[in-house]
Length: 137
Image 1 (cartoon, rainbow, N blue to C red):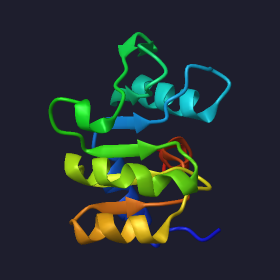
Image 2: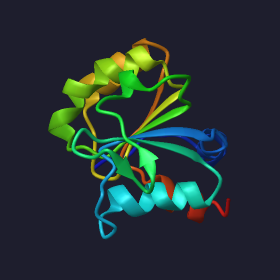
Image 3: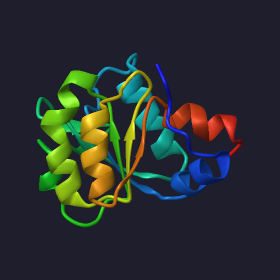
Image 4: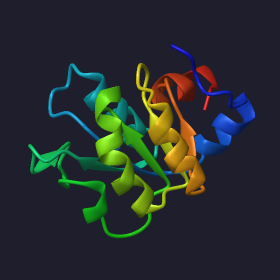
């Protein structure tokens, strides 16, 4: 699968943003959708879980959708299959984050174009944890 064309400098700028909503955050510690946001928390990020099947994850209140979160979000980190992106992208766009970050293996060109047209940067097929470690942040 292809990957976005952002430079390391741009990825570093994105990773300097610290308020992250995680759509699809998991209750299960063995899943990337759990240990990636935990890593972000442990590295100074303000993480808000979005998972309609949980009340709390990592002792943090969960939201059913990103639209329910009060206050601004810098990055919406998405752990949902590519075929579900179109159904969540409008909520993401309404929240007006600076960046929508689609984790490894996730790509939906049409939805990404909608976000870009709304002025939102879109990272796709990259892992925030892997990029943070690769860049030595």
